[in-house]
Image (tube, rainbow, N blue to C red; front, side, top):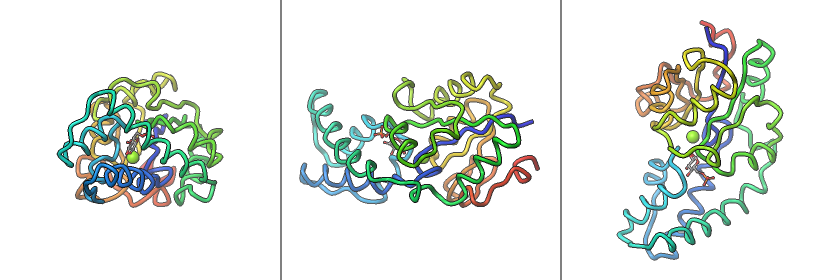
Length: 213
Ligand code: G6P
Ligand code: MG
């Protein structure tokens, strides 16, 4: 029996991939190489530093660890400037309704994100109060597909992993949920997310009745 719903943030609650893309592209341009949307797709669920390392690899550019820190900070400053302008209008369809439904049905709700900006995004979109536990990039050491983020969240919610369901848009996130021993519902393309227990286009296609079934 499902007792808790754990949500990824980027691509499930809000669509921040486009802001990440703009900021990474700007950085790549400064370093004089291109960064495509297809490449951006591969960075979903991947931590900031690991994303940067992949981008530098793709661009064939070598940087010292100190330079990498500076580049990541620069990208993040641009990214934060963009998400600072987010409002409740940026919440993806069906998200608030489903969160409210789940809580009304007695389910616990948690956030499991790789982002260090998760708190800021939830605050800007006015969603903070709908989560019983938040685990993000500031508290986890191993990023998805490692199950740490979801296991930490389940522990905070005081629910055993087998009774948790994770909503995820990233391949790495689905793998993390399965490795945690949880059910995984993919948000997006059924072919890309074939390891999920079920795939839906968005939370506007989910309800408590469907979840129970
Ligand atoms: C999410 C996104 C990734 C992003 C990561 C870290 O998992 O899908 O694209 O790199 O969070 O985000 P941050 O806000 O900490 O840079
Ligand atoms: Mg995501």
